[in-house]
Amino acid sequence: MSTFINLFEVLPISLLDISSSDIFLLSSIVPIKVYNNADTMKQDIIKDNKEKAGVYRWINNENNNSYIGSSINLSKRLRSYFNYDIINSKSKGKSLINDALVKHGYSKFTLEILEYCDVSKVLEREQHYLDTLNPEYFKNSREFHRISALGRD
Image 1 (cartoon, one colour):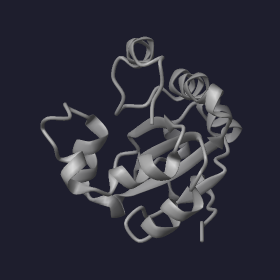
Image 2: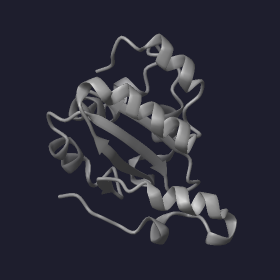
Image 3: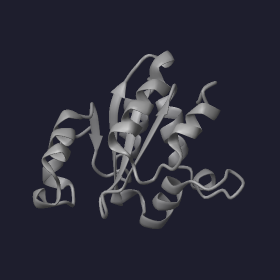
């Protein structure tokens, strides 16, 4: 079962540290689902997102750094984050979010489903959130999408 929370109550930031434009931005993006402890809510994350395409965001609860991702098969993609052999694999290349999950542990992360969308719109919607939120765990996002425009799992 997913849990809905007030982000201003759990984010480790002070309202004094964010500008009025940031407040507008935070208030204008309301996730569809929020899993405030990815460790204890793993089964719900996998089950709730079965056979759905969409955009998600990992948020490190300790430093508020985030990562935006998308998939045409959210359950499969999110399940892969919980496979230590996959996220710790050196052959898969360097991934900032995988490194952070290994370093800090799943219990230190919130997972948000930002939106569900049609498979044909997944990359477009992900790019919207990348441009809007500028996540810290995602480098060279525009170049990545030019290279991967043929599709993602």
